Length: 126
Image 1 (cartoon, one colour):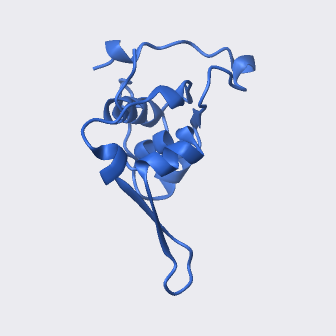
Image 2: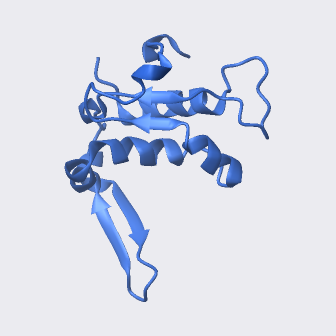
Protein backbone atom coordinates (compact mmCIF):
# COMPACT_ATOMS: atom_id res chain seq x y z
CA UNK A 1 0.00 0.00 0.00
CA UNK A 2 1.31 3.44 -0.89
CA UNK A 3 1.86 5.62 2.17
CA UNK A 4 1.55 9.36 2.27
CA UNK A 5 4.76 11.05 3.33
CA UNK A 6 3.43 12.56 6.56
CA UNK A 7 2.06 9.30 7.92
CA UNK A 8 5.16 7.37 6.95
CA UNK A 9 7.52 9.95 8.47
CA UNK A 10 5.66 10.24 11.76
CA UNK A 11 5.59 6.47 12.29
CA UNK A 12 9.26 6.10 11.36
CA UNK A 13 10.22 8.97 13.68
CA UNK A 14 8.31 7.27 16.50
CA UNK A 15 10.21 4.01 15.91
CA UNK A 16 13.62 5.70 15.67
CA UNK A 17 13.03 7.77 18.80
CA UNK A 18 11.84 4.73 20.78
CA UNK A 19 8.50 6.21 21.86
CA UNK A 20 6.78 2.86 21.27
CA UNK A 21 8.81 1.21 24.04
CA UNK A 22 7.90 1.09 27.72
CA UNK A 23 11.39 2.17 28.78
CA UNK A 24 11.34 5.40 26.70
CA UNK A 25 13.49 8.17 28.15
CA UNK A 26 13.48 11.57 26.40
CA UNK A 27 17.19 12.28 26.82
CA UNK A 28 18.47 8.81 25.76
CA UNK A 29 18.75 7.18 22.33
CA UNK A 30 16.65 4.09 23.09
CA UNK A 31 15.10 3.66 19.65
CA UNK A 32 15.62 1.10 16.92
CA UNK A 33 17.46 1.24 13.64
CA UNK A 34 14.93 1.59 10.83
CA UNK A 35 15.33 0.62 7.17
CA UNK A 36 12.79 2.19 4.81
CA UNK A 37 12.54 0.55 1.40
CA UNK A 38 10.53 1.58 -1.66
CA UNK A 39 10.84 5.29 -0.88
CA UNK A 40 10.13 5.96 -4.54
CA UNK A 41 6.51 4.86 -4.01
CA UNK A 42 5.55 7.60 -1.53
CA UNK A 43 2.76 10.04 -2.24
CA UNK A 44 2.05 13.62 -1.19
CA UNK A 45 -1.49 14.86 -0.64
CA UNK A 46 -3.00 17.95 -2.21
CA UNK A 47 -0.80 20.28 -4.25
CA UNK A 48 2.32 19.59 -2.19
CA UNK A 49 4.25 18.20 -5.17
CA UNK A 50 4.39 21.73 -6.62
CA UNK A 51 3.83 23.99 -3.58
CA UNK A 52 6.16 22.41 -0.99
CA UNK A 53 9.67 23.91 -1.15
CA UNK A 54 12.88 22.72 0.44
CA UNK A 55 15.24 25.61 1.20
CA UNK A 56 18.98 25.38 1.83
CA UNK A 57 21.80 27.91 2.00
CA UNK A 58 25.26 27.56 0.49
CA UNK A 59 26.89 29.74 3.16
CA UNK A 60 27.77 32.56 0.75
CA UNK A 61 25.92 35.89 0.45
CA UNK A 62 22.86 35.43 -1.74
CA UNK A 63 23.31 31.67 -1.64
CA UNK A 64 19.76 30.64 -0.77
CA UNK A 65 18.61 27.78 -2.99
CA UNK A 66 15.22 26.13 -3.11
CA UNK A 67 13.74 23.02 -4.71
CA UNK A 68 10.14 21.92 -5.02
CA UNK A 69 9.14 18.47 -3.85
CA UNK A 70 8.94 17.29 -7.46
CA UNK A 71 12.51 18.44 -8.21
CA UNK A 72 13.93 16.87 -5.04
CA UNK A 73 12.04 13.63 -5.73
CA UNK A 74 13.46 13.61 -9.25
CA UNK A 75 17.02 13.89 -7.93
CA UNK A 76 16.70 11.33 -5.13
CA UNK A 77 13.38 10.00 -3.73
CA UNK A 78 15.01 8.87 -0.49
CA UNK A 79 15.99 12.45 0.41
CA UNK A 80 12.32 13.46 0.56
CA UNK A 81 11.68 10.81 3.22
CA UNK A 82 14.89 11.67 5.10
CA UNK A 83 14.00 15.38 5.28
CA UNK A 84 10.48 14.60 6.51
CA UNK A 85 11.74 12.31 9.30
CA UNK A 86 14.59 14.65 10.30
CA UNK A 87 12.09 17.48 10.76
CA UNK A 88 10.24 15.38 13.35
CA UNK A 89 13.32 14.67 15.49
CA UNK A 90 14.80 16.88 18.24
CA UNK A 91 16.96 19.76 17.01
CA UNK A 92 20.08 18.97 19.08
CA UNK A 93 22.94 16.46 19.36
CA UNK A 94 20.54 13.70 20.33
CA UNK A 95 18.46 14.30 17.21
CA UNK A 96 21.58 14.10 15.04
CA UNK A 97 22.59 10.82 16.70
CA UNK A 98 19.11 9.35 16.32
CA UNK A 99 18.96 10.35 12.64
CA UNK A 100 21.99 8.13 11.96
CA UNK A 101 19.77 5.12 12.79
CA UNK A 102 17.66 5.73 9.67
CA UNK A 103 18.44 4.03 6.35
CA UNK A 104 16.27 4.95 3.36
CA UNK A 105 16.40 3.21 -0.02
CA UNK A 106 14.43 4.05 -3.15
CA UNK A 107 14.04 0.41 -4.26
CA UNK A 108 13.64 -3.04 -2.70
CA UNK A 109 17.37 -3.73 -2.28
CA UNK A 110 19.22 -2.62 0.87
CA UNK A 111 22.57 -3.24 2.55
CA UNK A 112 21.24 -4.30 5.98
CA UNK A 113 20.55 -7.98 5.18
CA UNK A 114 23.32 -9.12 7.55
CA UNK A 115 21.50 -7.54 10.52
CA UNK A 116 18.42 -9.75 9.91
CA UNK A 117 15.84 -6.93 9.83
CA UNK A 118 12.24 -7.64 10.81
CA UNK A 119 9.46 -6.47 8.55
CA UNK A 120 7.00 -4.09 10.21
CA UNK A 121 3.60 -3.21 8.80
CA UNK A 122 3.19 0.54 9.38
CA UNK A 123 -0.59 0.25 9.09
CA UNK A 124 -0.67 -1.66 12.41
CA UNK A 125 1.27 1.00 14.34
CA UNK A 126 -0.81 3.66 16.05
